[in-house]
Length: 216
Image: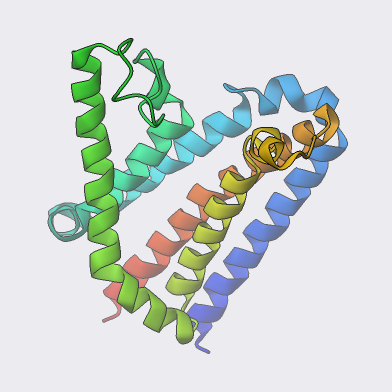
């Protein structure tokens, strides 16, 4: 393993320790910090959104027009993540555009449906481009345990796990499992901390990739 690879794995570890420490503080003193850190417009959520926009800006500044031309879908997707973190998906429409009933509800005006269709189309396009162009190389690099691939795997894990515990009572209710308000609050706080880690790891992956390109 090269010194460069070791350096990035060390960074990943530092972030993991930092997130664990933040999670410990948030979960241990949840009632004291809830209004400041854990509300919909709390510091953690705003920091997560800012992190996504900072990642997009970094890719744009570092990669320039060539990166925009060949890999601009990364910038688009990360920007959409930031907008989602600020609840833009439901801030300007009658129903959130990610809701399954958005396009069939008679309560949603045609103009909103058109705007939602455009946004969803852009999202699907960016995900399709990433998967079609980078899934195979990612799997190959993951077998080789490169810093970039490991970082992306961490991002996928954080996305999947934080999504799985989002609205946990609603997901468990069909199974007849009742979740107490205390446990729901616990997982809600944990979700916010995990989501903060996503743009941080994306930034590290982007930095690692650009550095790797620079030495080629």
